[in-house]
Image (cartoon, rainbow, N blue to C red; front, side, top):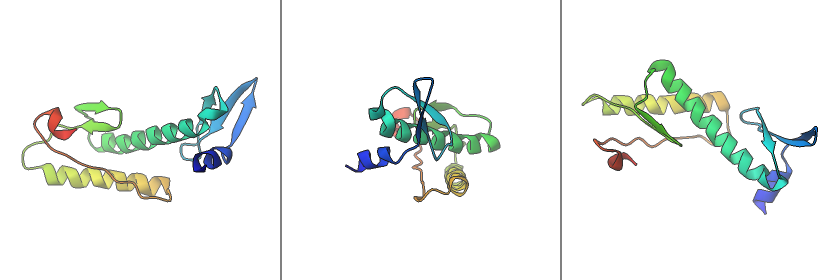
Length: 120
């Protein structure tokens, strides 16, 4: 029931027979095909916006990513710099929290390894 209640609270408008959902976090309008998609569109759009905002803070300081997949990034880090990088990445998510002012603080997990299987 909570999902239906959240969906019912969202701002949806129709323009030329096309439904649009307003995302209060990103402030973007998303195209909707069906009313049943309101909640998932809201959640997915919010998650992408938050992740992309975090990545933008990272790229502002370090214009290189080794990899990016769905909701994670990979950085090549010099030996001995792991704690420094971890604190910097945590600071970037704190900046996102300050910018978005959500009712829940966001956090990240940072893992180190020599192979992708060690960090995923």
